Image (cartoon, rainbow, N blue to C red; front, side, top):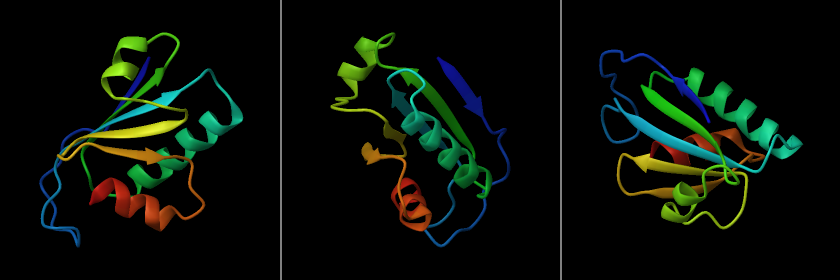
Length: 106
C-alpha cells in the first residue's frame, strides 16, 4: 500500500459548494499496469493543482481483498472517494480531467 498525503491548509472557498478541507480517496489497482500508472499520474496532477487537503491510498486488490470487498470494487483501476459523503466510485484514468475533477470534488 502506498499512502500519499497533502498537509492540511486553511479552508479555501471554491466553486463546488463551499470550502473543501478533507478528501479521503482510495485508488484500487491490480499490480502496476499501464492503466494503473496512468490513473495515479492523472490523480497526482489533478490533486496537486487544487487547494484541497487530501489523503490518497493506493491499494493493490490482491493484497487488500477485505478493503476491496468493503468498498465494493468490481474492477481496477477504480477510485473510491470515501469522504466527504456520499461515497463515490470513479473510473480512472479519464480522458477529460475537468470532468474527473468535478466528480472528485462534488
